[in-house]
Image (cartoon, rainbow, N blue to C red; front, side, top):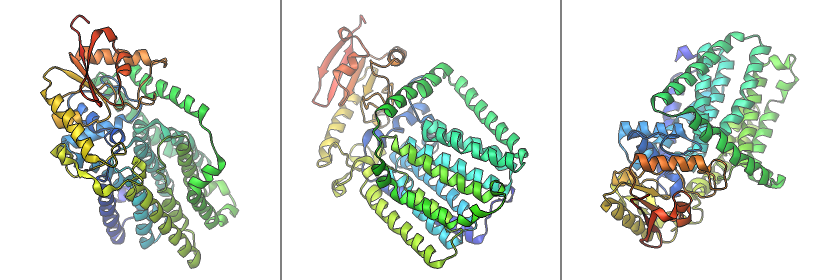
Length: 514
């Protein structure tokens, strides 16, 4: 790896092996422990749909995550379509960001033992909180890897590294618009300031060239797959902005709540500042590369805190604690102070590991008896390894599996072309049929697709109509929480013959004269 000018030796290689095995193993274990169906399976059916020639923006409405869908499709293509491969997707990202973190520690001259320790703490708090591919995690981790490349570019003065920085921010943005956009707006200008102040303008051309090439490739890819730029802009920019504006207007921010939720992250930042206070007393402050690196870490942390404040998801950014404390220990010379910070990192890692990994809080399973979970092979062998228990049936997972198997049986017997709307986005995979869902989720709060009161509802309705005509759909099935009203918003009630199959499952046959 000399062409990257990245520090690696025998000890570092040994460290990479340790953190790699641990980061994959931890996520594979916790990714199998319970599910929150519409979140846990977000990219399962859509990844498979892409393999069968269907594409986001054109064939199904999405507001985030096309990179996650396409990467999942690639993994399904390489290793087969199964739950184990699906979880491996998240494990692979956990591996990648953890190894990047380890290299950052080593290249900032943190000793090998501490580099391994803080990297292991990082990996256990990174992707295992979800365990399965999730857009917020992808966006945060690809943004963080982009930040790491900026730090390495500053440290190594490398045009080669500068070329690849935009790639990671593009991946991050195509995973989810935020927090990646906050990083692009907040961190890249700091990098440009470093280049201009230190007269290293030769780092700019490869950066812009890389960005232009990668964006051009994406544009060509979209054209080849029939994805219209208009649809991409509407679904990925315009509509999400309308959701974000509503969220910002109604969000009630409590200063005490922010401090309470993120107190250990703020404490870590205080430790980082205290460990480096001498750097701020040096002459030519803004020509000091360490100041820029510290500033990048500091503002990256605040960006992720800011993002968490304005998201409705569970907090997942506690991996910042070992990252920040690890970087702080590069400058800590006092052994007592260093021991205190290591102990703090260990205690907080155990605390949040217990809450989010063991307790599965991110998927709303906190306090649920996970020991009563059932192997999801009872649904289909493609789900083998998953311990099935959900918040909806937290005391009786067997009952939910019976309901799913009933739905599965009915869909398998249905010979007509069908559309299925519901929050079990794995059904098309296990029955090996196209179920033509026009959206990834059915949350019904306007965050997954436009509701009738939205200015963008007519666009969504047209997409649904196109899917029905293109796939010659004759019958629509809905699974609770999707109700009759939601179907009638999209299709004239007079054109449908409705049948209640059971309390969870409904059938809507499309009349021939409609």
